[in-house]
Amino acid sequence: MTGAVHDYYTRRMWGHDYTVRAVAGHRLRVAGWGPYDHKIVSGDYLCLEGPTKKVAIYKVTSIEYERDPPDMWFADAEYVVSKIERDDVLRQLETQVSMREGVRFR
Image (cartoon, rainbow, N blue to C red):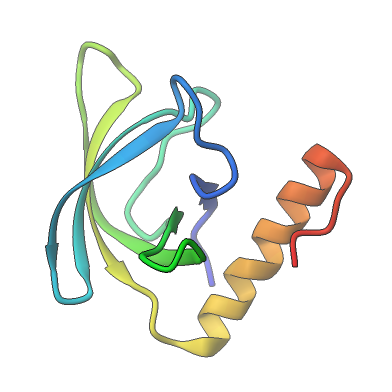
């Protein structure tokens, strides 16, 4: 796994949120805002809320940023089917959440 993990599952708030614009099989078209500290790029992972309210992991295949506001983006992403890849992303997500909140994710 090479991409960065972006937590939009436990960190949905003003200025750091998303909306699903279209679904086609395992692919999504997503609009979002944030993060301010670094940009999302192709190959990164988005942790989103899935249909069963559990975390769903998507890999960004393309992304475009708006000029105003500069943190607004539109991305195409594909659901991560590989268990090995999903487990790796979940470990990174758990580390981010535990460092930020001092609690275990799973």
